[in-house]
Image 1 (spheres, rainbow, N blue to C red):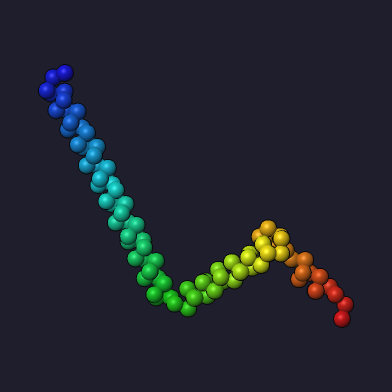
Image 2 (image 1 turned 120 degrees about the vertical axis):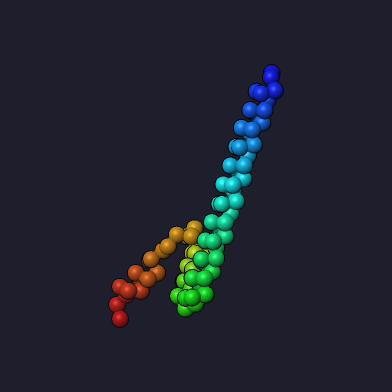
Amino acid sequence: MSWDTISGVRDATRDVYDSAVGRVNQTKLEIEGAGMSVISTIKSNPIPTAMVGMGLYWLYQSMQENEQRGSGGRYDARPYVDRAFLPG
């Protein structure tokens, strides 16, 4: 193998490495920017954020109660339907 071939392979490998490092760094910056955007949105809208949090907590609790009843986490409308159609 000649030195020109080895040098060419080395240069190509360096170019690929530099390109990969550049892409990783760019992706890292984009992810950090997205995270800061989410934090900024939450700080700017505390009441809707709290409402979403409460809704997620309510959903989680409902799923936990269904699992304890043995419905496997599936929504079961029968208790509500039965009450709705009871006379009196």
